[in-house]
Amino acid sequence: MIEIDGGLGGGQMLRTALTASILTGKGFHIKDIRGDRSNPGLKNQHLTAVKAAKKLCNAETEGLSKSSTELVFRPQGNDFRGLEVDVGTAGSTCLVLDTLLPVTKCFENKAVFEVSGGTEVKWSPTGLHYRHVKMPLLEKTGLEADFSVERRGFYPKGGGKIKLTFKEWQQKRLELVDRGDLEEIVVCSIRSESLASREVAERQASTAVELLQEEASVQIRSEVKTVESDSPGSAVLVKAVYEDSVAGFDAVGEKGKRAEDVACEAVEDFKSFQASTAAVDSYMADQLMMFAAITSGSYSIMEKTDHVESNAYVLEKFGYEAEFRKKDSKVVISF
Image (cartoon, rainbow, N blue to C red):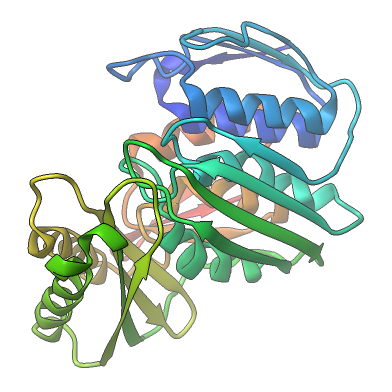
């Protein structure tokens, strides 16, 4: 039984452990789950991820309850198939999918995953980022899958749904060390129907484009959409397309937060990334590690963060050892 100190990080440690456990068949015991967070223990989105992972490998579990800070997970045999799960709150659907997606490495047939809950919420990848950044990057590993947001879910009601249709995975080594020149910037801005009269999405987009024109000489285009949702909300993504990579910088609207400020937040993140030579943005830095481990790949990030270190710690427990080296103004992670 693999022992994991969950107090070293957040929910990503648990998600990585679940994925690695299914892929290796090794059980684990994690203590002090999300111990470095102000609200430790299992929340709805974590419970949903564990329950979904449990179905994929018929696992035996102990401590599977809300707010539990300890979990035992023992795989008992694979049952690889599509799943339909509901977080039940505005908890992140994309983070739940993160647990399931790498397991498709073992799937022999097509499968569909549907996850209901929040799609554009704080402290997690948005549906915009998943669709426009993560999936294109994963295509570089040979993964063929269609991702869509069937309905947007904003805080506090959630009510959104994402859908991933897995086709096949002809595994290739992930190689994302050098990004090449910046070729294009795309601003994707969305808002709920209830915010249409205030032109929130338009203001997010126009502000982002104006600020980006001061920073880059490449083509900049924008896409503005009105979406259906149970709660009012908005989000914006600045997508940077490079010769050999793609990066994304998103921000989510909040009550009392001006649309212009939402746009500024995303643009500032882009500016920091552009000043480096990294191939992968900070949102993807730890999320790509499982895929790099599976494919014995490598990629570069801006810096070695606490999230990256805690995720590498979990992967090493399951036999995937990460190596880090400095190269110019970036850090290269290799497996």
